[in-house]
Length: 97
Image 1 (cartoon, rainbow, N blue to C red):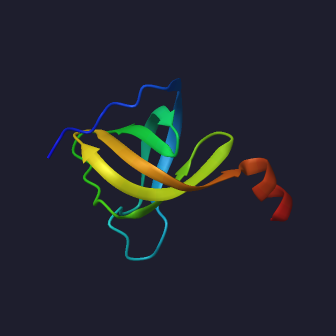
Image 2: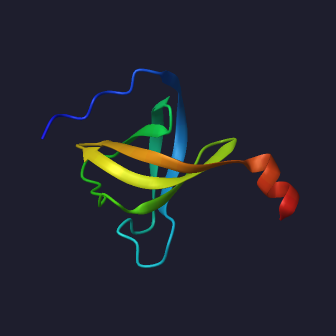
């Protein structure tokens, strides 16, 4: 299997929280991470080494101004690649709460 290409569109490093989006998820609890890049509909997030996440798991990624809903596609060491299904502005979420 070929190595996952690095995401080339960097963003300023943002602290994020990564958590499973459904009950019985393979991502127990939540994990702090750093959003290292976005390219198209894929996020690249650095998590602590030793955190293992199952491919195919639905996750919620909370950044300072945005919530991303997506699916874990790959993990290489402490780097997780997530395909974004939905991107929601926190201000819009707050307006409907």
